[in-house]
Length: 293
Image 1: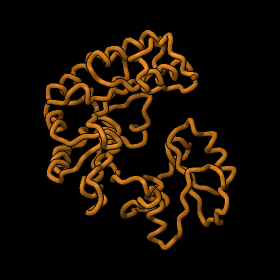
Image 2: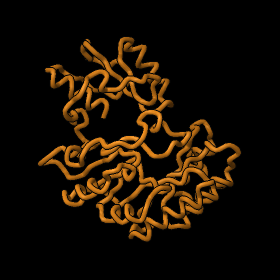
Image 3: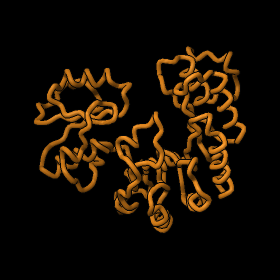
């Protein structure tokens, strides 16, 4: 979205835009009047350093960088996004709200966005007539916004299919919002499967997680449609046995677990992640799983 908004601003000024995913200067690239780079993850710092060497005057932003500058700092208010730089992306994308009610230590959202606030209507996020009514919502806490009911009404009345990309906050879900969610045509990121994402990150939150999970099921959302992310490698003293126990609880509920490894350098947890995501756990015990082949 950052790059699409930057591109839109420059095209509206009559500038030509060159888009690439590479951190290196490509063959036949022209000389640029301005260069931007956006990075989400800190683990791509090596690519970011290469990019800066290639383009020392580049303006770099994003959570993965040390910069606090925003797109709006560079462009001011911009109307719309330039979807042409991602020609294979057919959906519409945006935020109906920003911020989050929680302040998890491993999450940057509270620091970057603060408390919940309204952002855009569903209709304003949609690209318009002739485009699929499929919207990727990047909201970090959809039901944390005061006006969530009107957004749900917009989704249903407008016939939109929605991917709640960042998940639903199951720790704070209420029966009323769960019933509303059950009425929405929710999908995975590819709009192929009916899926809701949520998280069971902290093992100490099992009771709270189960309360929210049961509220979702009672509202009519089947367990097999709930994808549960689980943060691993973050908690002090956590063992592989602890991780396995949390994973098994999710599987026993009838949901799909997706481990998120906090420290990518932990080989055992990365192995566990692949064992789960590739669904080898259904056929091979973890002790016998060889992820090097």
